[in-house]
Length: 281
Image (cartoon, rainbow, N blue to C red; front, top):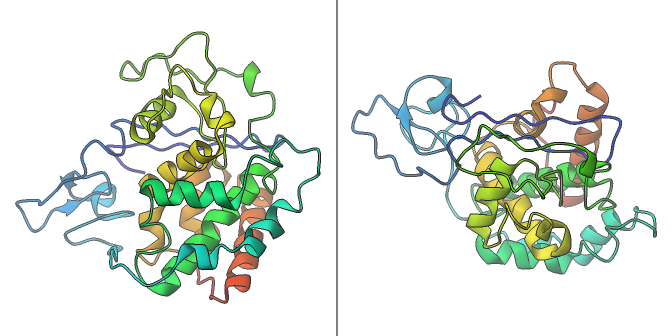
């Protein structure tokens, strides 16, 4: 994992939806300028110069990167890929009593995408973009149970306040448990996500469960900061699992990994693209 940004994502395997535990120090958007003076240095995905896996590995932007990132814009039209039929065949699997019915929608997804995240699904090769869309929906399908869940089950009973994080201090009357398509959790994620998207993440974290567009925006916020570069640098789907929920990897929760892979293979097949190699973690 990154030396300058440790990301830990865990899953309570007996509960749906899953929860994200992403430790962000510093925040992903806090240093995204490099131009390293020494050509032997790599620019990390978070905008810092250095050497080793933390800088030259996953998400490396410039320099002698292990996985060079292709930021070329392509001609993929996300609305033409994520059609009503594609979206509906996911949410239609959820029971009619699910809280996500009537909340999650293709319209909310596209409005969130258009707001500030149009590099998603349009960067790298055309194959990269189709695989990225398939990967995003594979993880979201797994995390929310086919768009059934908006909030983490029993989330109100859990403490997701990191009191050591003084940059994003907790409001003691608020809960920072999993919400939305990616199940954003912890004060150190709600704070910067709210800052970047435009809501008060620390004092009104429930906004993520009340506003479907903001809910999808938090999913894109996390994805674009932590997963996007994996998809446009030729790495396999397994690396996205490790970035989203590394506690499942290395045999710790094979069933969960296989579930994510199952959806990814399904969506790649529907979109007519090869899933590639290195599917597990």
